[in-house]
Length: 161
Image 1 (cartoon, one colour):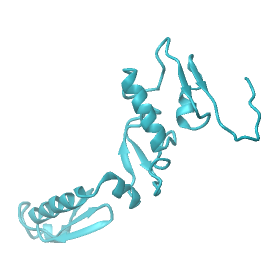
Image 2: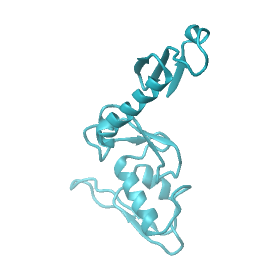
Image 3: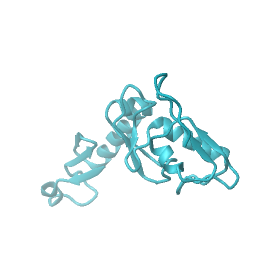
Image 4: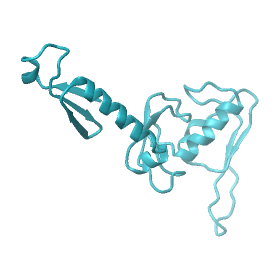
């Protein structure tokens, strides 16, 4: 968010007076005649945007911000959402999908792990993952007690590693 003041008008008015203020907010411009009106417009805009769910904002092409439970990175963006919200919304740091982040969040909560930092399994924990790719797999692949598999179809014979 950025607020710019028209310097030509500011030279003719004291600091508390109306000066042509331009409020630029995520590509939408609101022109007002004074700072108070700009603040009121910002409140109206926040109220209007607040009526949309995070899913609606994501599908409109707006990335979401937050912490990723897979890589443990704070202040990342979740972007590139599609109609399939489950498999889209990649983390800007580790590329984890929404589904992978939800699995990691459950792991962190159920195993009482910290919300940030590298995802590590506690000693003695055994975890089976029915997928052998993706960001969650990459985060856990070296952990003792971690086992994974992948279904390749009926035509592929099982192999033991």
